[in-house]
Image (cartoon, rainbow, N blue to C red; front, side, top):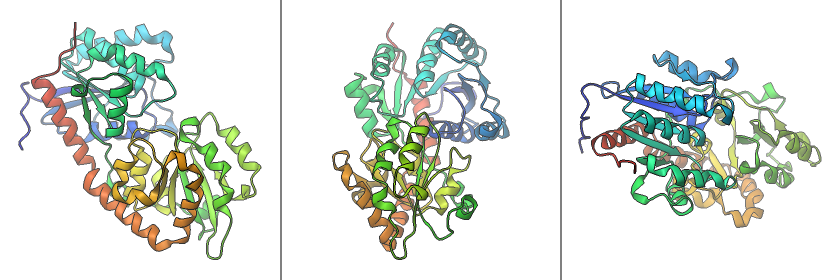
Length: 389
């Protein structure tokens, strides 16, 4: 079906607004959008509420600049900066004649919808990327300010259901657009050498990538780690924790008291997580809740098997092959045995990895994601759901 043409003459100014531009799943998908959107139909601009990322975390900024997009950084550091940030963003929307605002992440979602309303922006879409279960006040604010949003873009059907039930967002205001993966980027990434990190070259590496906080469940992963880190004939298991966060010291303390402490490696944040995925045996995701975990999509793109808890978006990602790779939350005690199963059965591990990659190619390409966003923006420009007065 041919997509509708825009009522605007020439390309439509679209501002993508996010909390910050340090590397992350939401940030990466924003950069895909900004750099690959159809320039004959849209003029992409990027605004970050926070300051520019530090030099060692500026990979996404570099990609934007290379594409001719110079982001606006509002240098907000706390809620005390909210009035100034709102005024600056309102002025930016007016100065750039922004017709569509597409925001990502909670803080940017709230600030962007208010500033857009003040500036008279024609259409506002807010990205909901997680089923937030810890900060319930987020849901109350979403509900309170929802009249100022034309569409809520959820990354999974599970998140859509969550905000409909928990935040009271009307279903007609919700659209689902999953994250996208660049398969070529996966293929072109050079695999890491484990020996660089003091790990045997033939080790069976179990990989975790992500923040070290309560949501991600690394605490409970470590408490059962001895159950899958015991060496067996032909299997030399090691667990790599790739990421930082507020719980790192606590998690390292847990690891030090385990029998397999020497097989657990905290490597901190790394700018090229795909290189670790390329070399790993499998990815583990012990999360308590999610939205649509981008790291699982990246593992799929790299042709890797996954062991994950049943969180929002995971069934949609893994499909039928999820039966082996997904552990229900209420059956957490089976997580270690599922890891051991995939370590022991190489043929199964490789088959699942190949199926995951094929599914990523078929259903979660970057082009598919971008097409969905472009269709949404043009629909909103034709007949946006106008906010209530």
